[in-house]
Image (tube, rainbow, N blue to C red; front, top):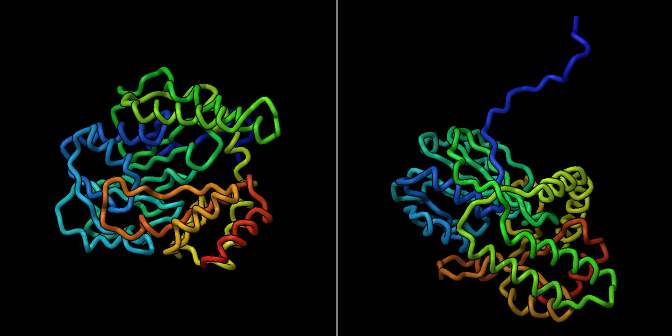
Length: 319
């Protein structure tokens, strides 16, 4: 007979859980726990990752990422202790699960584009982290899950300085978009730039503020609606454009496609008040064509079918 009543039971969590102020802070904490290890890094990545590796004096080398974002570990010729994989724009690399070479390695799964952090490939020694700033309205916050305990003494219980500029910028942008005549575009752009300068200078690892936890929870409560709109916008674009990869997605952060007219197209979109990010500026001059030819279209719940059609109208001149 089933027991009824009492406090609700809770199954034990299999992974260690940590929170920091940002994705780069989470990466910094992870690397502090991997001193003396050699890491294989993908040759298509944000240069900030390399900056953090250099700050923490971690040895690394680059391996090749294929044009469709797949990872062929047979092409990694050098010895390594840790494999760093990026779930680009929410794609999953579950095909790497069970490979003999990786059973003795530590896997860092960079999941900054997704709210979902799950060890779907069943890696034995696994750490993953996200960045709520990359896919939601949250101004701070990063979740880490790890299959082994990490030393978290370096997490400062106070809050990062950059968040105050970011919150102000987001609020002013909201007023601006609501046609508040007292706010100019530069009012919020200058605050965003100030926040970016502060986070770029930051070397310390901070906690998430109460305001940050509140907005993370608020976003999680709204996530099903956000996912539904993202999926629909993705399908609208997919009718006319080919996504860069057919790998499965855990979460669709952007619609990313390949075009050799990337810079001209991006300039044309800019002239029509459509501002698309570049993933990523090739600051390190790494030899991979993905840096030159990818265009990322935001598809989150701010945007309707009409906005997707507006983008397609311009893109159709080039593709």
